[in-house]
Image 1: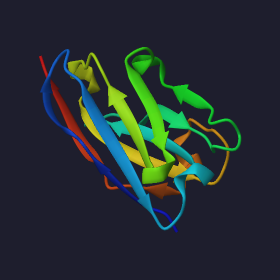
Image 2: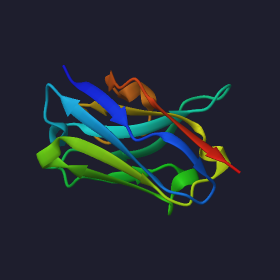
Image 3: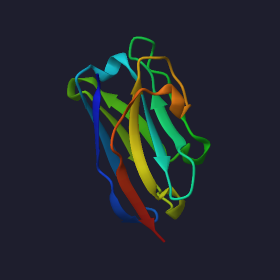
Image 4: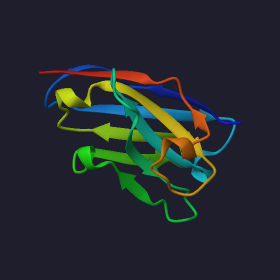
Amino acid sequence: QVQLVESGGGLVQAGDSLRLSCTASGRTLSSYTTGWFRQAPGKEREFVAGISWSWSGGRIDYGESVKGRFTISRDNAKNTVYLQMNSLKPEDTAVYYCAATPRGATTVSGGYVYWGQGTQVTVSS
Protein backbone atom coordinates (compact mmCIF):
# COMPACT_ATOMS: atom_id res chain seq x y z
CA GLN A 1 0.00 0.00 0.00
CA VAL A 2 1.07 3.54 -0.74
CA GLN A 3 -0.42 6.48 1.11
CA LEU A 4 -0.13 9.83 -0.65
CA VAL A 5 -0.62 13.25 0.90
CA GLU A 6 -0.67 16.42 -1.19
CA SER A 7 0.10 19.88 0.12
CA GLY A 8 0.93 23.34 -1.14
CA GLY A 9 -2.31 24.41 -2.75
CA GLY A 10 -3.83 27.80 -2.20
CA LEU A 11 -5.23 31.00 -3.67
CA VAL A 12 -2.90 32.97 -5.93
CA GLN A 13 -3.13 35.59 -8.64
CA ALA A 14 -2.56 35.03 -12.34
CA GLY A 15 1.15 34.96 -13.10
CA ASP A 16 2.12 33.71 -9.65
CA SER A 17 3.82 30.43 -8.79
CA LEU A 18 3.01 27.55 -6.46
CA ARG A 19 4.78 24.33 -5.58
CA LEU A 20 2.73 21.29 -4.74
CA SER A 21 4.18 18.40 -2.78
CA CYS A 22 3.16 14.76 -2.75
CA THR A 23 4.65 12.83 0.13
CA ALA A 24 4.36 9.07 0.26
CA SER A 25 4.39 6.60 3.09
CA GLY A 26 4.33 2.84 2.99
CA ARG A 27 6.51 2.45 -0.09
CA THR A 28 9.40 4.16 -1.85
CA LEU A 29 8.12 6.51 -4.54
CA SER A 30 11.19 5.99 -6.69
CA SER A 31 9.84 2.49 -7.40
CA TYR A 32 6.55 3.89 -8.73
CA THR A 33 5.38 6.05 -11.55
CA THR A 34 3.92 9.15 -9.93
CA GLY A 35 1.56 11.51 -11.64
CA TRP A 36 -0.30 14.74 -11.04
CA PHE A 37 -3.86 15.12 -12.27
CA ARG A 38 -6.34 17.93 -11.85
CA GLN A 39 -10.09 18.26 -11.97
CA ALA A 40 -12.04 21.45 -12.29
CA PRO A 41 -15.78 21.64 -11.49
CA GLY A 42 -17.83 20.09 -14.25
CA LYS A 43 -14.77 18.85 -16.13
CA GLU A 44 -13.05 15.50 -16.50
CA ARG A 45 -9.89 14.66 -14.64
CA GLU A 46 -6.91 15.86 -16.66
CA PHE A 47 -3.34 14.57 -16.75
CA VAL A 48 -0.87 17.28 -15.70
CA ALA A 49 2.53 15.64 -15.31
CA GLY A 50 4.13 12.30 -14.54
CA ILE A 51 7.52 10.87 -13.64
CA SER A 52 8.27 7.16 -13.94
CA TRP A 53 10.50 4.85 -11.88
CA SER A 54 14.01 6.03 -11.12
CA TRP A 55 15.72 2.91 -12.46
CA SER A 56 14.02 3.32 -15.83
CA GLY A 57 15.50 6.77 -16.21
CA GLY A 58 12.69 8.73 -14.65
CA ARG A 59 10.79 9.49 -17.86
CA ILE A 60 8.83 12.72 -17.56
CA ASP A 61 5.61 13.63 -19.37
CA TYR A 62 3.50 16.78 -19.33
CA GLY A 63 0.00 17.60 -20.41
CA GLU A 64 -0.15 19.96 -23.37
CA SER A 65 -1.77 22.77 -21.41
CA VAL A 66 1.06 22.98 -18.86
CA LYS A 67 4.16 22.34 -20.98
CA GLY A 68 6.76 25.04 -20.43
CA ARG A 69 5.08 26.28 -17.23
CA PHE A 70 5.00 23.29 -14.86
CA THR A 71 7.90 21.09 -13.75
CA ILE A 72 7.67 17.75 -11.99
CA SER A 73 10.55 16.48 -9.87
CA ARG A 74 11.26 13.89 -7.23
CA ASP A 75 13.32 13.95 -4.04
CA ASN A 76 14.06 10.33 -3.20
CA ALA A 77 15.51 11.19 0.21
CA LYS A 78 12.21 12.83 1.20
CA ASN A 79 10.04 10.31 -0.66
CA THR A 80 8.29 13.29 -2.21
CA VAL A 81 7.31 14.36 -5.71
CA TYR A 82 6.90 18.04 -6.46
CA LEU A 83 4.96 19.99 -9.03
CA GLN A 84 6.38 23.46 -9.58
CA MET A 85 3.74 25.61 -11.25
CA ASN A 86 4.80 28.91 -12.78
CA SER A 87 2.91 31.53 -14.76
CA LEU A 88 -0.37 30.30 -13.36
CA LYS A 89 -3.56 31.10 -15.23
CA PRO A 90 -7.19 31.18 -14.05
CA GLU A 91 -7.81 28.05 -16.13
CA ASP A 92 -5.33 26.19 -13.91
CA THR A 93 -7.89 26.41 -11.10
CA ALA A 94 -8.74 22.88 -10.00
CA VAL A 95 -8.26 20.25 -7.35
CA TYR A 96 -4.86 18.71 -7.92
CA TYR A 97 -4.35 15.03 -7.17
CA CYS A 98 -1.20 13.00 -6.78
CA ALA A 99 -1.32 9.38 -7.93
CA ALA A 100 1.05 6.43 -8.07
CA THR A 101 1.26 3.15 -9.92
CA PRO A 102 3.77 0.30 -10.05
CA ARG A 103 3.36 0.30 -13.84
CA GLY A 104 5.44 2.22 -16.32
CA ALA A 105 4.83 5.75 -17.49
CA THR A 106 1.18 6.47 -18.27
CA THR A 107 -0.94 9.57 -18.75
CA VAL A 108 -4.21 7.71 -18.18
CA SER A 109 -5.85 8.13 -14.79
CA GLY A 110 -7.15 4.56 -14.91
CA GLY A 111 -3.58 3.32 -14.91
CA TYR A 112 -2.94 4.67 -11.43
CA VAL A 113 -3.66 2.62 -8.34
CA TYR A 114 -3.06 4.94 -5.41
CA TRP A 115 -4.49 8.44 -5.03
CA GLY A 116 -4.18 11.28 -2.58
CA GLN A 117 -7.09 13.35 -1.30
CA GLY A 118 -6.25 16.35 -3.46
CA THR A 119 -5.32 19.96 -2.83
CA GLN A 120 -7.20 22.98 -4.13
CA VAL A 121 -5.46 25.48 -6.37
CA THR A 122 -7.34 28.66 -7.18
CA VAL A 123 -5.93 31.27 -9.55
CA SER A 124 -7.66 34.63 -9.65
CA SER A 125 -7.50 36.94 -12.66
